[in-house]
Image (cartoon, one colour):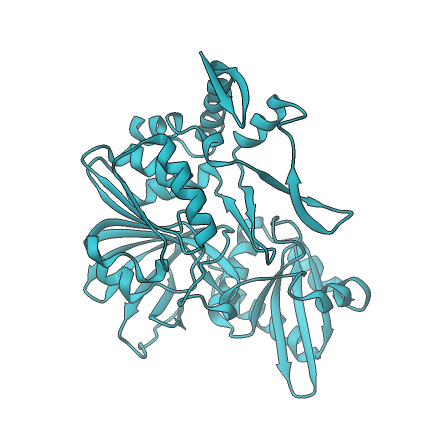
Length: 405
C-alpha cells in the first residue's frame, strides 16, 4: 500500500516502521500504563501534522525551513518520528510554534488519567497532533474540545484535523484562557502551552473531581503540574518535572513570568559574553550538586524571589539556560545567573549576594526536592496565611500556594 507525504509517494510500511520505533522509544522513557494510550500514539501518524520543519541557521542567525523532503525521505521521517519537539511554524514577527515531544504528551495523558468517554478541553491545539491523540483515547463516546488563538495556526490545525476524519473533535479560534463555556463541564483540561495562570474560567469549567494538567511557569521556570478540583474555587495537586513549552498568548499571558531569549535581551547576551564575572568558588559548589537538586533550587528560587529571571541563548533549545536574579534598582542594574555549573554575575553586586543568600536559605530548609512539592490553586482570594516551607505566588486570576513535604 502506498501513501503520499507532501506529494512524495512511498510504501505505508516505511511510515509504520518509524511510527513503531517512536512508540518504542517513548515506552523506554515512560512505560504506557494501558494499551489504549499506546494504541492512540500508534494510530496517530505524526507526519500528517507537520508540513514544514524549521531549524536554526547559524549564518543568518534566524530560523529557516529545513527542506529534508527533497534530499532524503528517510532522514525527513526520522526527524518527524523522533521523540522530540519539532518547530513547524514561524509567523511574520518571528514567533515560533512547535509540536510537543510525544513522551511529554504521553506523560500529561497519564497524569490526567484520561479514559474512554471523557470530555476533554485542550488549550492551545497547535498543529492538532495532541488533539488527535486525545481523540483516539476518549473514543467515540468521548469528545475533545480545543482552542487555538492564532488565526493562521487555526487554519493549519483545522485542515490537519479534517484529514483524520474524527467526528469527536470541536476546535475554536479563540483565547484559550477563557476556555469554552458552552460545552462545560469537562472531565479533564490539558493546557498544551506554558501558562502563567490558572484562570477562573478553567476552574469554573472543570467538573468537581476533574483534573487539569499544565506546564505552569513562575518567573521563567516551567514545571508540569497536575491539579484536581477539590472545591468551587480550589484545586490541589503535585508538581512533577521541569519542561519547556511555548507560552500561552492572549489576555491571561503574563510577560513577567515568561523566560527571555537573546532575541529579546540582546544587550544581556553581549554582557554575558564579554563583560561578566565568574564566581569560581560558588561555581564549584553548584557543580557538586546532583542534577535534581540543582533543578530543585532553581524551582525554589522561582517561587520565592520576585527578582528571579530565566534566560535562553536561543528560543528552540534548553541548552545554555541561565537562571538567577536580575535587579533593576537605582542607577545600576545587575544580574547573577547560573548557567549549568557556572555562576556568572555583572553590575549591581547585590544581585549576586541575593542569589547566594537564597541558596543558603534553600540549604537551611533541607534542600527539598521539587518532586516532593505540592501546589494549591485558589481563585477569588487576595491572600493566604503561610506555614512552614510554603510559598505564595499571586497571578492575574489565581493564587498558587507551593509547599514541600
